[in-house]
Length: 98
Image (cartoon, rainbow, N blue to C red; front, side, top):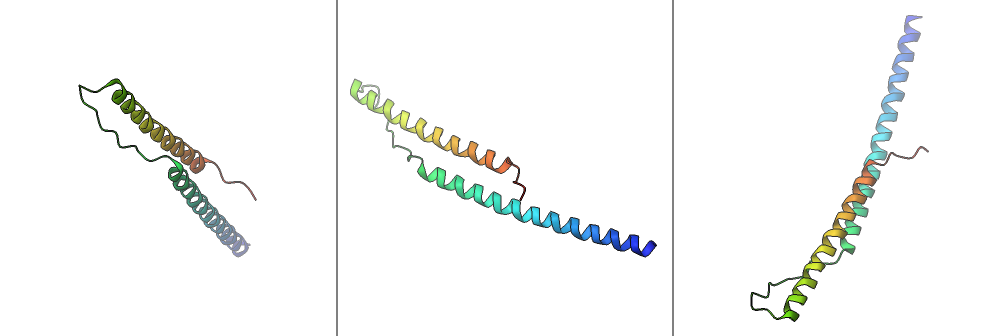
């Protein structure tokens, strides 16, 4: 009876280890997919505009153009932030059961 219990314990340990390894591999694949989606998201964000401060003697048109440029920076930052939030959500989403 002792040998049977030992064999059963070993069998359970092997199955448990296999399931952990399988889950680990699934999680790694899911994480890689999340990072790939994150990179694709970031690539869709507009580039940072090149904003040059027009100086103290700027015309209203120059100041308006500068403000629009700064808005472009905010748009880029918001886009990147949404990509980061999607990455966190993706990485923390439990794997689906098969």
